Amino acid sequence: MSRAERLGVFGGTFDPVHVGHLIMAQEALGKLRLDRILFVPAARPAHKRSRAIASAAHRVAMLRLALRGAPQFEVSTLEVDRGGVSFTVDTLESLARRAAPSLYFVMGQDSLDDFPTWRDPERIARLARLAVVPRGDGRLPRIRPELRGRVSLLDPPRIGISSSEIRRRLRRGLSVRWWMPDAALRYAIEKGLYGSRRG
Image 1 (cartoon, rainbow, N blue to C red):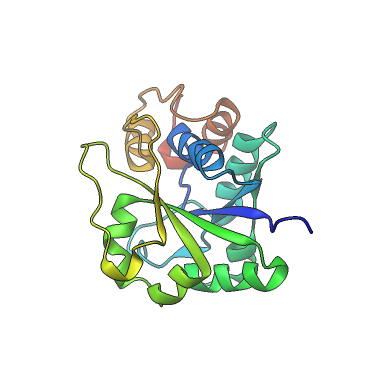
Image 2 (cartoon, one colour):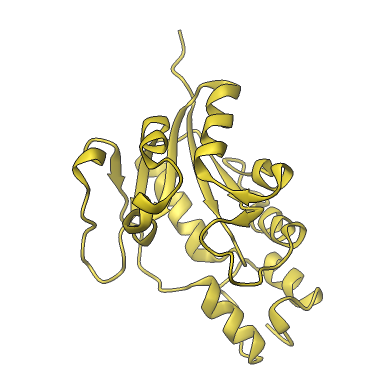
């Protein structure tokens, strides 16, 4: 009998996707011996309701361009197709019902710190192992007792790129070349996303 698929689930706004996301995913793929990683853009992120975000269609298009040529990375439109506010627990339950794989949810340390405020965090931790990328300041996350044995720490290179800084730079007409995959950056500029004037 073959082993269950080891599936990474990388949720986020991806507004826009950048090389830091890809490095995190590659680290999870290798360290956790995953078969593939699904990038799951949120329809409407539960924790970012106050900020305007690029349309789901644009964010999905940039992700598809960024992941082209990486067969172990896939875009899932599960949350976009479902619509409304996106909750991780709903996505993991849907994936578990479809194929019953071993699930690993990829997240940053900031998300782990906020984890108790998420919808049904106990259920999330039962459905998936949490693959956490620590902050770049060298401080390791505090693992709550109820999550012990359910968290794997990753250690990718620290590069300090964020989607918010990319948006700021594009609005100001500053270059973000090498911060985003070329095809995704070209798309953002062609569509005039984030007030971009040049890359």
